Image 1: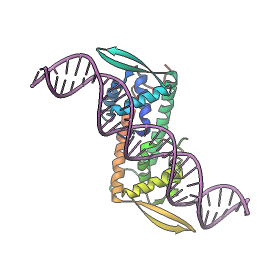
Image 2: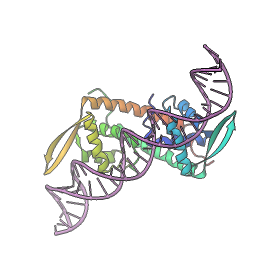
Image 3: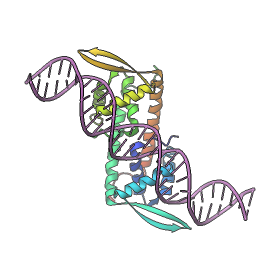
Length: 112
Length: 112
DNA sequence: GTTGACACCTAGTAATACGAGGTGTAGGTT
DNA sequence: AACCTACACCTCGTATTACTAGGTGTCAAC
């Protein structure tokens, strides 16, 4: 149920979602919520600035459009974005397996 | 090879290591480096303040000792510390599987 | 007698996720 | 008509936190 504390890994999630197809910010939030089964229910104040950051870094481009009276900013991965994504996937793999190795030391809480 | 960017998960690692047996700060660093196979090679400026923080939060206690002329501060988990650990293990489990669910959407980079 | 491993510490910095607010449209319900 | 909810965007400030860059001191080896 916790959405907080995805500290360094937000970019990976955003890039991964948008890599599957162009999406606007609000849709990214929804997609993340659904795909994570409510684990990631990110506030807009988290996602929008992050998207701006990624665009500024050259990993995303965006385009404005208007759909049924609402303006949307739709994001797309650049070549750099794809490169960054696959790099960050690898980092995640390494990171999470390192954590696993550390945690594996003591089985699980046997309430000592 | 990178040790940085373990953003929100440092506490989990420290608690997990110390839960296996009392350890002093320097030994915690070594243990983390070895167990993670060099992935986590944490600077002292990261670990020591974190240990202080955990102690202040009541999750650790410490005791000074002197071994071969060197003073050591050895840490131990409190009851709260054990509770926090098992909570954070669970959080990690949930967090990492949520990430996996998000990433699983598109197989792996087929260089599109 | 200097270097390197051991062993601790603090102060400051940069990054960043989030909270709290704000703007506006469309489509309902009351 | 007034209101609410979902959609859709935004910014500013704050708190946390990992890290950098320093500092102190012991011991063994060279």
